[in-house]
Image (cartoon, rainbow, N blue to C red; front, side, top):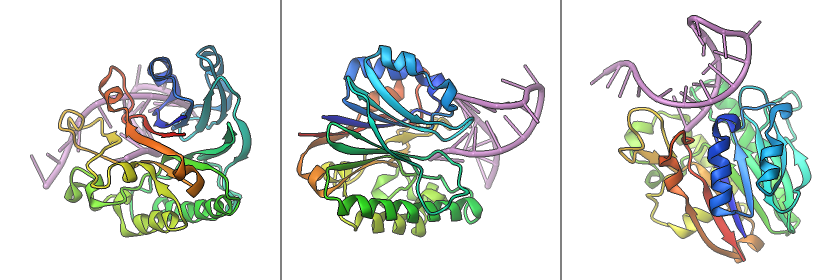
Amino acid sequence: MKIVSYNVNGIKARLPRLLEYLGEQQPDVVCLQELKSSDETFPEADIRAAGYGALWHGQKGFNGVAVLARGADPIERQRGLAGEPEDEHSRYLETEVGGVVIASIYLPNGNPQPGPKFDYKLRWIDRLRTRALALLEAEQPVVLAGDYNVIANDDDVYSVRAMQEDALMQPESRAGYRTLLAQGWTDALRTRFPNGGVWTFWDYQAGAWQRDAGFRIDHLLLSPIAADRMVDAGVDKEYRGREKASDHAPTWVTLR
DNA sequence: ATGGCTTAGTTCCTAAGA
């Protein structure tokens, strides 16, 4: 079972690239982030024609998450996180596919920091931790897949110096992510590549892709039961180099 | 030291991203 996290940076602009990816890789589940699409304009027909059922939680202009499943319709469990009723950002969609709980997560970027956007990021991590703990206590296979906007370790970035003032690398961001992991989650990519040096994002600017100046912020977190079933994990890096690519590459884990 | 690129939207500039 190949489960993918893919920040598409606009589902409309990325649709040809996404359909190409589905056709070539035939992943079983794809968690999408940054749809930048309202619910009404989500390209359901094109995705269904490619052989995938879908659930989506859209928002006009920015944010937006979805879960696609090959030859199946994901079952909805929850959209949004508790704890901040006035929060209207579409950043969390929890589903079940083939007996596995799978959530698509788009954690706030938090720049500029310090400031209200960074405070929101930290609160959102707290809210995610509350939900994640409840999922662990249910003792099911769970995959929390998404763009976490956290560079967890110094070897997860091409240049610590270049990013040291960024919200993605602040001690508070890292502490939030590590406290989440410490509940008992397995960072699939970190398990596969314990020495780092693996990127999932390359900026559009300053020739970042050509210089391989990237970092790892797209993560797949596995509950203990899911971690026991892990076979492999990786990044489908070549898709970042294609025409009209997203600035993120599809990041994946396979489970028995 | 700076700026650079892409997407979307009250669209020919601005916000947001990371």
